[in-house]
Length: 129
Image 1 (cartoon, rainbow, N blue to C red):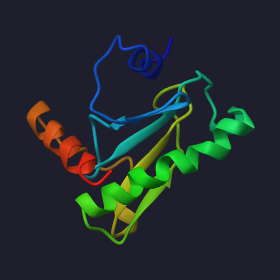
Image 2 (image 1 turned 30 degrees about the vertical axis):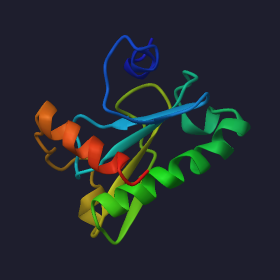
Image 3 (image 1 turned 90 degrees about the vertical axis):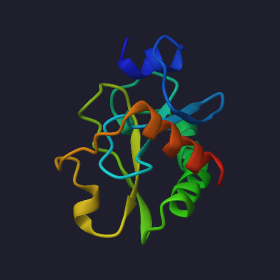
C-alpha cells in the first residue's frame, strides 16, 4: 500500500484541498513552491498512463479549479502540471505555481514549512476554491 493510499484511507493526515469519489488533492509537505499540490487518483496504479481512461480524462477537470485557486492565492505566470511520478509508486500529478522554468525543478531545495505554515497555505488556496 502506497503512502498515498494510506492518505486516501485516512491512515495518514494531509492538508486536503479537494476530494471526490475518484481523486484527492492535498498539499505536498515538501513543496518546491507555495501552493504545491498533489492530485492523486484514488485507485492505486503506479504509472499515470496506466490509469483507466475515465480517470485520466477526469483528472484535468478535477485539477482545473484547484490550479485556478493556486494561481489566485499565489499570483504567478501560470500553474503547471508535472507528472514525474518517481517519488511514490502511485500515479499523481503536481500542480505548481510557476514564473520561471526553475520553479518546476523538483530537484531544487524544498521549502521547509511548519505545520502552521502548511495550514495557512491550505486555507489560502481553499478561500479561492
